[in-house]
Image 1: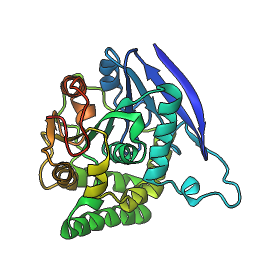
Image 2: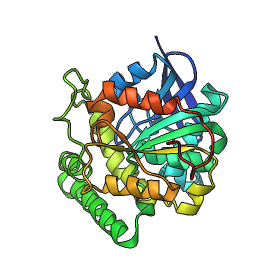
Image 3: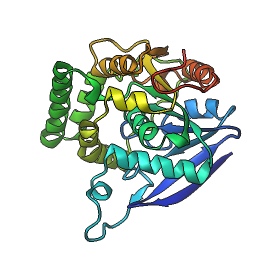
Length: 291
């Protein structure tokens, strides 16, 4: 059974869905993905958890309020802090207690900011290949910035289709290698195209502006699991980011099935791995990652 609703937050009305029962698991989707992304994975997790999925502000059914004069810039041009605050409002309204959180790609970055900014609401965070470019050494960050700058330039000059293909190339987000019955994202619709435009216009710049450092991550009391796709090559910058994150946490990244798109292409195996990690005792802080 799926329960749907909306929640008013500063500057937006957030659409959400819940499935299953039991401990709360909040899913933070990547890219232009809304509450329907990774549906196969979510259904498998909902056998064990009450799973919350939602449309990030500006995507699909989550609508933006008309900004009032003098409104904070973050409510008009969202940042990772804005997205993390939205997630916190959802947990406060729907969970009422600390919850387990899983985020992939941009969702993983939102999860990191949530764990740092609102640690009392996060029991455990599993962050899968977050584009945390602020953690990279100078040369690595410069390379990532150059790739993201090229991505935005492609979007401006050639449109979202070319930018989407380029994004897949720099993250390794392929779908050819997948489980036989894996459910791929739905065909392109006017809504999904609008989501792509929003993502490239607002969320990619927000990713670039997100600053995280070793000290901040180590200080959070939230246990953080850095997750990487077994099929994600070291040549992709998302792999470099998760390796650097694990180093900042003083541990090693845990391997999950598939590549950057593992939650979509390998839902059965990914769910098994994630359920195993989520079931581990939750204690320690960001620098004492569960092994």
